[in-house]
Image 1: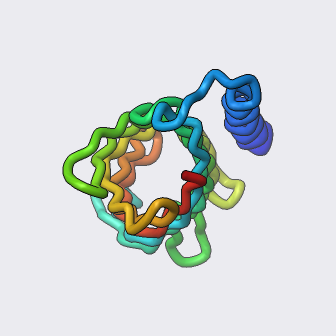
Image 2: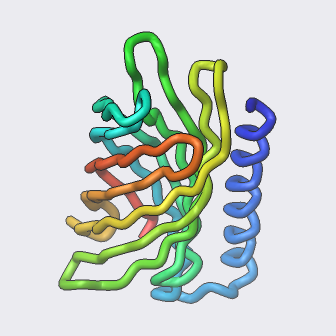
Length: 169
């Protein structure tokens, strides 16, 4: 599992470096993307713990991304998905985002990607990650982000979160 997490993290970092290189060579113009962003979110997870029983837990994530254009971005995140007693489930994700303006300072987005997860070293895997949410921009750099994410596959979890995001533009 540690190898999978390392590979996922390196892929996210390499993608960011390639995208950042575009800015150095002038292929990105203002308003067309080129924004680096990061944030932290807190929320609630509903997961299938044993059979059909639902388990509720708190979650948090630390994420960062790069806007390729004003409506397409790549994003990587570290997730604390759930904790039940002494068992903790964490993961690293990589996803593509598509966003569109809804109103002044408000944009909606959808995301699709993969998450490599680990359950205290006893179990691990890689599953699909789908999500949707909205970001309200308070000013040029700061915003508030609300989001729903679904992990589907070996583990099934619905994650709801809200948090702060900071962008370079």
